[in-house]
Image (cartoon, rainbow over the protein chains, first blue to last red):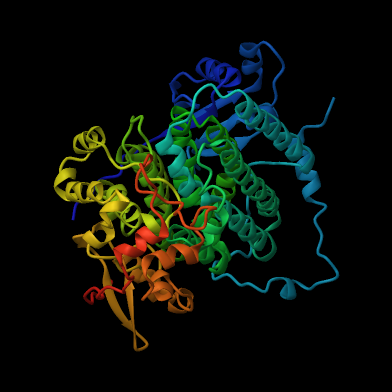
Length: 99
Length: 508
């Protein structure tokens, strides 16, 4: 019986519906998160980061060029890996069950 | 200056009250074996009803605009293999979503501490939304796809077909098991892992095959799942505060990781490998990335410090990735007359790709496809199911045929319980049965119902016949000089028979 060691990972990510908003959110994420990477899967994009990913409304608004808010971000946030934390001006994805 | 929603949320929580018209013991008719007293839950998504509806309305405005545009502005026809496969694929979804809504209502009533209840109640509404989104997709496809037969019977088929039976068995277990188990099983394994892969991963395939409507449906459904995943994590984080829950959590994770592998897992892999023509990742590659590295790797690694171990059958689940889609396809294609879509057999190019991605594929599966291609013309009066030696047995628990990992080398087994012989596909399902035998009895499976029926009578009984009353909805190829009729099937003279049972085996 083979025992594959499950890869240890500390990456978290957010998956967003492709479009203008997702592109702005990805650009903002790269500004605010030094280890962020972005993958394009056609219908959606994945923004990935080490240990935590902060999506800040202020930075997104600057990238998008028009006012933005958390409820609208949640419209295009299709999925994520990690533990989500929703605030008034940000949505953060952190490592699950981090103390 | 509007008050912080987060602060307002905490204030509103304090308005919770105990109703006077019903006592707690009257309300909590369903018990849980988990320990919940004195624990401190945390709610990550602090959603008011007003903000919830604003967000959901915006989602629906965007999505239904796409639906509308897609009806009027179609530039090219979507891929037929995909659109036909989705008759089977989509039909099962609405009932699953509706069941999830019921499960959440049950949880909100019976076990939810106040901090978690709002999230569960929102999920009830979300699942009703999803049910309707999927029904609207079925209706859209029924109106716009060139062969609507199959889309029109989709919801009925979900209740009667073998595929429907697999998902019904899973949903009914969710609705009747320990309610806290429901949260871990549904929100962790289904919504965070497997349906996440289906809705997001396969949305990319849907778009690539010209089904933009379904891609949008899937992504907007999954955006609600973001809150459901958080419900699951919040429940788990709460339970972990009491050490007595640790062995109960382990049992639950072992059971549901297996059950979801043997339902959603099979479906995901089948669609990713057999319903597509524009190939990118194989099902195995997709699973290794999404499930085994991201989900199981990330998730279980965090639980180790609580004493929780990786799923009991993880080795098998990983090894199955080489076979799951292919063995499932043999069943789905082999039993084509009792389904409700047009099949597109694998081409030489498909087979070459499979051999590249799954070395050894041709040795295990090539002869089936050769036989299949000899049995597509109705005038030849040959049914591939007869060439295969008839239908297989089905598992008492998961309702799948006992053909995994490979039909010729499967882990099907018999077991005596209370003087009756039961059949299981695997040790995993056998253990689930033995832990709660009464939970998995008292219904009729496919063979119980149709043993002794000539095959065309099964198709007729299931209602999978076109409007002319004689042509089958299902056909073994996309194009045909002449379509198979009930009479064509009858002439092949295949009578459904329970096959000999598998040998006995212990679960351990």
